[in-house]
Picture (cartoon, rainbow, N blue to C red):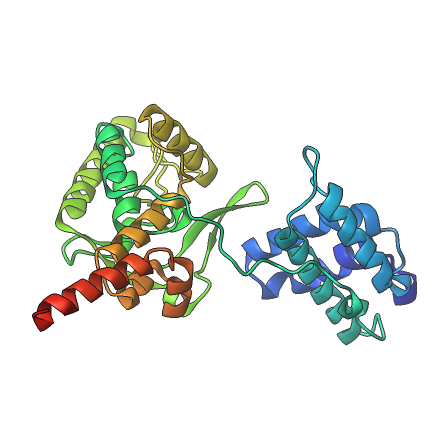
Amino acid sequence: MLPSRLSLREFLEKVWLPAIASGVRQTTLGGYRMLVCQHLVPQLGAVQLQNLNAAQINAHYARLLKEGRVHGSGGLSPNTVHHVHAVLHRALHDAVRWGYLQSNVAQAADPPRASAQHTELAVWSEEQLHAFLDSVADERLYPLWRFLAMTGCRRGEALGLTWRDLGIEGGRVAIRRALVPVGGKLVETEPKTKRGRRLIALDAETLAILRHQAAAQLAEQQQLGDEWIDSGRVFTAEDGAQLHPERISALFARLVQAAVLPPIPLHGLRHTYASLALAKGVNAAIVSRRLGHATVAFTLDIYSHVLPQVDADAAEVIAAFAGH
């Protein structure tokens, strides 16, 4: 098939996605494939690659903003349309590098500006966090909820933990991987950055709970015998199998509702951890390292809502120290 006769769909699905598959994270590839299949191919896929122009692309972006939702009525957010543009721009850039096009027409397109502001984070107060942990204290997966709340780890990082990662005697846990759903399957992925691979100190109570978790898991294994699935994970289903991240998020939502607490997503435990740590005066560099963020600046940008109170508290401490 000659390059000049390729449609955009054929280039994206048969050339571009397969070509970049080995060079990007599986979760990234899954995101690209979703945007291609849902928001590029249905409307622009039949256009020949050589005939695609900026006017068509701009008209497509306007349509996505107005009626781009796949399920339900309404348009996509400017940020989502900007992501669509980023994928198309990269694909056409590669088409130029590989000799399929003379120029990248996406450079002349005008995507909506992505918002630079972070949406308001859904977090709990210290009292609400304690209330949740108290309400699930008798649940089988209480060690998981406690671990997430006390470390700020991501969902996939916690579910990807193995007992080899957990140094109970040393009081630290090594974050080396994440368990994430990709295309209907569970996949282990590496951290995005070097700082994503990290050692996190655990508090004494969480350590004690994890020791109890080890004993409880051994009892479950002995009870099931040959039916036990040896996944090696710290947090498992009752038969030892890996826990599916999306099912854990759904279970968390039900537990929050049962506890009559303000609804937050499971990732809200991570935000709650970071917000409370910064509000309590924990150094931002330490919080950033424990979260696995690429830079301290990134941490401060996300949790900037906490900083005014921290700054005010610091002013009072300094004033008291100076004797005024």
